[in-house]
Each structure stands twice: as structure tokens, then as C-alpha cells.
Image (cartoon, rainbow, N blue to C red; front, side, top):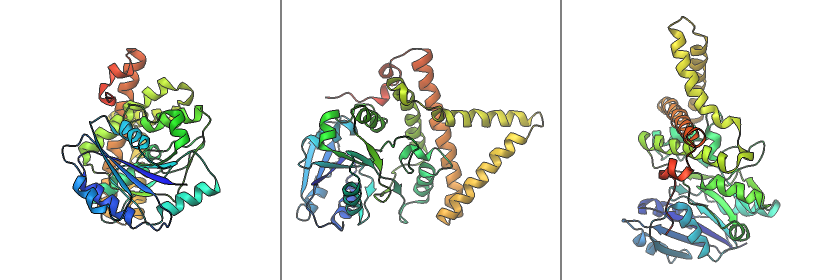
Length: 333
């Protein structure tokens, strides 16, 4: 297999520098290429690319802004490989990444895979707390592909592999964002392609976000899910309602305290204590464990509110997805 890394970037030259440095250090003897797509950035990474031209087979494309999904499609259309490795620009690769991918695909080939993400020691405490929230089994962390699912695994585009054959058959990513990766996974399944998780092919995902940006991100995740449920009702699950129900039940538990009914508040207190202890064991930091509670609350509230808003707009007001939430759709050029 000839691998092509497909990496869209928007105003993040420092991230590309870190990612390319990690690609240079990969322990892999077979040739591969790197394709960077500058998605209409005002701060380009062209000077960064020049640094690595002697060490990597690298291609650089500058195009007008049309979103990450369309930029990935553009990169795959211009790549030479027969298997594409799609990364976000805020990722850093461990040295064994390509070896793990190749070993898994040689053992059990699929046309699309996803890998999990982890945090580096150099990440900020807030980044580590958000990473915990986005990957923990105690939260809605499964939405980011950290654990295998009971039914079918939906790869996420921060760390995703896609064969050329599957790309050409599916036409790649749509123009919704976020949500373009589960949309692609479902269309691939409907075309007869299989997906899987490669647990060993993890990336260090930097998550360039503060609390406000994290809320915006998970709120958009929540808004996207009812749209996908509307497009593909056969894949809708009751578990998608859990963040909304978590928030609603939390409010009810506070109200019941006024009537001296404390059992539900005690259950929530137990949950947050458990969350703190698991985060403390994993991170060995009281501050990160405390931040993990904040991150989890933001995640539940942001996702749950976004989901409920989108569900109401689509199913009660009968609005189209593009009209209800134009912020989730890029206008393709």
C-alpha cells in the first residue's frame, strides 16, 4: 500500500510544523507522501512546508475556503496514494503510527478505519481535561472514537483512513461540519464497505480550544446529530438523547431539593466524585481532575442543548437542515 497523508489546515502554521516534525520521525521504511491543503488561510504555512521538502515527499495546495470536508476531498483528488490517512492539523503522531496502521490493514483489511486520540504531557491542563472528557467512558466521550462500538464503528476525521476505491465510490465528505465523518461512514456502509477501529493507531490530539471554544464545538456536535438522524433514521439511537436527558434530570434534581427530595442530587454528586477519581487516577493531577468535571459539564450541556435545539427545529418546526442551522454547512465553491 502506498499511503498519502491528507491534512487540511486553516491559519495554523505552528500546528503543521509540529505535525510534520512527528511525521519525519516516523519509524517506517516504505515510501509515502504528505498532502497539505491550505483552506483559504490568511496566515499560510508555506514557509513551514519549505522546511520539510528535503525530508518528506510533500505537496502543498492553496485554495479558497470551503471547509475541512471539501479540502480533504481536494487533497485526495490530488494525492498519489491508494490509501489516504486523514489527520487534523492539531495532531502529533507517535513514531509507530504507520507501522500499526499497516500491520492492522494487512491482518484485516478494511476500506475505512479510525483511531483514538491521547494527550501528550506537554499539553496544557485544560487540553488534558478536555481530552479526558472527550474520550472517557463516563462521559459522551465515545463520540470521538475512543472505544469500539457494539454495532459499527464510525471513524472520526481527526484520525481516519480511507481507501482510494472507497473515496471514489462515495465521493468523499459532504459539506456538513461537524458531522461529515459519521455521514461518510454511513454512506460507506450503505455502499457495502466495512469500517473498524485500530486502537494502536492513536494520535496525540492537541485540541486548540479553551472553554468557550469547547462549548461551541460540542454544541455543534449536538446540532449535527439530529440532522444525521433525519438523513439516516435507521442509524438513530436512543443513546443520542442521553446528554439532553442528563441536563434535564440535573435541573429536576435541583428543584426536588426544595421539597427535601435529595436522592437524585446525591446520585449526581456520586457521579461527579467518580468522574473526579477516575480522572485523578488517569492524569495524576488534582487540577486536571477538577477541570475534567468542568469539561464534562460543558460537554453534556453543550451537546445536549445543541441536540434539543436541532431536534426541535427539524422535527417540530419542520425546517430543512440548511435553513435551521446554516452555521453547519459550508458553501462549496
